[in-house]
Every structure is written in structure tokens, then in C-alpha cells.
Image 1: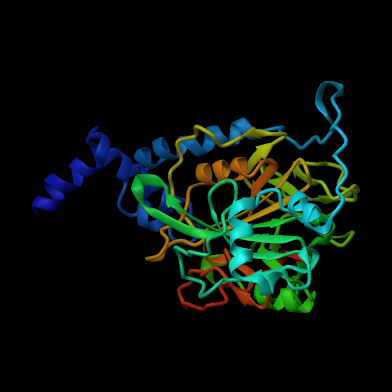
Image 2: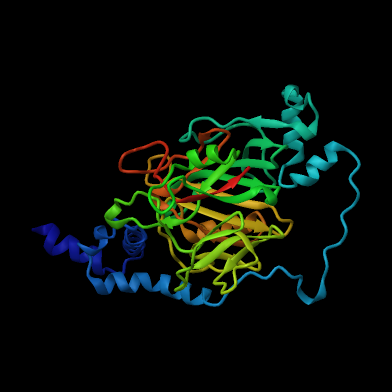
Length: 381
């Protein structure tokens, strides 16, 4: 009785800053899911939920009409790069995010990785999907720990760790893909009928790296993953039209630029899906300052001006990682130079596959290490 008459009203209506932050976090996190919104709607009055969710409405309003444009502003052009004379310098030019001193120190201690030259470096130090706090000794210039470098595919993978809303920890992986022409949208074997694990799509397309992409029809959480939600185009073939209504088409054009926007003409796109919200459009962070602190498993994709593709997957709803907010995703993308970036499907769909195994930990009711069956994925092959 005391809980119902005193504690419950206090938690709902107190203006106390500490309680308010936790109350908003709880509402945003519950309402940010597809199948667990009842955790908020059953116990919290609608007017309180609507007040908290107003932040999401304002974020969507800010994004209306925003679309990628890759042309240089004010007639500026990118200066010609200095000539590169050796494979070593070419390697460091390509992987400009590598902290050179830490990488050279690693190679000095592990000369076997350089035996075939810099152009053939293939380092993979990634352990179990839930492992965190790696000590490889290699860092990015942004300060994250490097776990893998594959010169042939142009891939660098780093561990992401930090604290997000209310000081709760998150852990995930960030992949930098230096060869955007290798990035495609792969589809499941039973498209429009049944889905596939991202691992299966990586195998079917003979890819090295993959992350989940589209959302999908998932009535009461029982969808098979085969019916994508929104626009879908794979290797030049359009498979489904757009839904619009504030959602963004996210994909690569024939010049390997990542395009994000509500495009009416999609003929210039070769591989694309549809989701929301956009994180960064033409260098502008579209989610900064929104105050949205819900922590969920997340997947996002972006691209820097030098065409480096940035793939981000953060685990959530688990002891080693509570998840990450959309606002923090935007900050991470910004720190790695993203000029365009967008969220992809998250929650129990979020997963990254590299070199034949899952390197992030999906959260599903079945605790399936492969995550959920899905309609499509962004692949590097």
C-alpha cells in the first residue's frame, strides 16, 4: 500500500532531477522498442509518456527535408594528395585512423604480421563476442583499441567502450571500410518469405564483413525476418519501394558515395535500404542536443569525406553492455569524420559478423548467438 500510495506517485511526478532522469530513461528505452512498449504504457500515464516522447517528435521535425549532397561547398576542391612512394606509406595513408606509433610498436613485438609486407597485413585479435577491455596495444587516433586490420579488404575494426546515459556502460565494435566499392546490400535466401542470419548472408555472398540493415515486418515479435520494411535495392536491382513518412533511404550510389534522404528518384542508387533517423547529413549532426538518452542495442552506418565507410554495432540489454543512445551514436560517427550517417535497425537485430563469426553479441529472447533472422545486410566482400 505504501508503494502504491506514496512511492509510485513520487516516481511519476517528482521534479527531482535524479528521479526525472531515470524516469525519462525508462520511458524512452521502453518506447524505443518494437515489442516491449508495454513496460511503459501499462504503468505510466499517457500524458507523461507523451511529454517525454516529444523529444523524438522534435528530432524528426528537424530532419524533415534533409538529404545528402556531396558536392564541395562554395566552389572548394579537395587538394591533390602528396605522392606515395612505398607500400608502408600507402598503408598509413589508407588507414589514417591508425595511431602510427602504437602500430609500429606492435609490429616490432609481432614481426610475423609484417612478413609479407604492409600490403598483406592481416591482424585479427578479436575474441568472444562479449569480451571487452582488450589490451592489444594498438590504438586509433581517436583513442579506441584496434582489434583487426585487413589490408586486402581495407578493413579496420576497433573496440568501442564508454559510458552513456546515467553512467551506464556500453560496448561494441566499429569497422572502418576503406574500399566502399566492396560494400553492397545482400539479401536473405527467402526474401519476402523467410529471413536469414547475417552470418548466412555473409557466407552466401562470400563476404568478409557484415552488419544488419533493414527493419522487417515483426507482428507481436513473431516475424520470420523475410519481409523487409521500406525501400530495398541490391546490386542495382530495386526489390521494394519506399514507405517515406520521415524514414530515410540509406545507400550507395554508382560513385560509391553514401546517400541519406527521402529521395523520389532512386535511379542513381546501386545498393540501399530504408530506416531512420539520420545521424549526420552533409556534416551536420542531426541528433546533437536532442536529450534522448534511451539505451538500446544499435546499428549505424556512415561515410567520411574520403569515402571511408563507418559501420557501428553496439550490444545492449546485457550485463557487459546496457546499450547506447542515438545521440551518442551521432557523436561517435562525428569523431570518425562521418559526413553522412544514419541509424539502421537495432534491438535484437543488431549484429556484426567478421571473418566467419559473430563479433558482437545479439540480444534475443532465445539467447541465440546468431541473433534474429533478417531480410538483408550491408556486406563487405
